[in-house]
Length: 159
Length: 335
Ligand SMILES: [Zn+2]
Ligand SMILES: [Zn+2]
Image 1 (cartoon, each protein chain N blue to C red):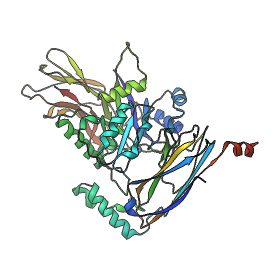
Image 2 (tube, chains in turn orange, red):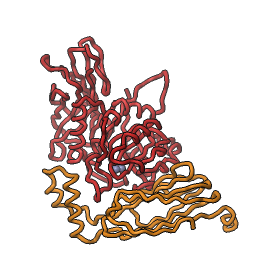
Image 3 (tube, protein in one colour):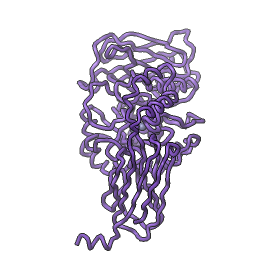
């Protein structure tokens, strides 16, 4: 296991990147990234309403505010969003900008999960970045696990 | 000039879209587009089969990426290496560095849906980046989503564009559906037509020619007919959309051309007398009604009109009970 980390995030962590660097000692044939976080949704309607009031105040022009507030339910439930992006020692390897709170991703020489770029997995300093776009629940816990299949075990596994 | 029907803002399953690039391009073809830009969120991995799909469908695919940051979404288009610019370094005060990097990589940068409601509804969707010098920005997506002319956030984006033009900034305006999935809709769909220059000396790929057009502001946006315009001076010179009329040229007439025959059968407007107008920094300077048929119209500037900073043509009409801007050209400028 190259990384196995858990952390509890709070609304103040919104709009921040969490960089998770790791050393890949030797080039690998396949890398797995499992990322999950929860809760995904804000079920508390009162809290959601308060957040929406701030949001409308900030982003909607004054003359349309009451209209938007009157139909704010269409935006519910509000949700947390954290996305994954990957850098190998040399280049950016893409991002998985989607709402799934559980993502089982992989990178490989000939194929990768959608969002990530296929290609060799060179040894060196890698980094997975968690981009915390928004946390609306009081707390949100994530778990990130990263591991590889090295070329030797990979071959034996499939021969 | 060949006008290329483009959809400049799209997503696939490589980000949060619910369609593959094959499904997206097939859908674009059915809707009569010649060209799309794939602008997945923070990734370009969806372009891995670009060449094969282009040759299979005949559709031009412009490579792009939507910077999906905490402080705004920025569409970047026109180069396969755009992912080398690091969207994660964007802070409210440093977007100019990101834009410069996009330019260095051979791309263009535009504000995506700048007034769409932001966090926590749509994270980072509202443009909050400070822009010191608007001349660094190539374009603003003033029409987002479907039935764009009636959307309140689009009115604000259109207003921002007009304000910038009035301040002397030469900046393009586009539409983008922000197309995430193949769903049927009755809503009018926007098309951004890009004017491709015919040049035999140094032929460009269609994608490169389209980017040259966008960079030069040779664009016209519509939910139906294609509206284009040129300005003729007394001396008989013609200046097209995106161009600047040099100081010294005088005695103008705008020539608008409307093609109702584009993308035939793929859009519909109720027959009515439409209102064609030439408007700009000096207000509306010419206006007439037109019938829904292909046509060329001469609109002389009134003799007492003061020289504007810029003008554009607009077509107005009633769509689903609302009086809306059906089409607008990008600006012609006056030095
Ligand atoms: Zn966006
Ligand atoms: Zn988008």
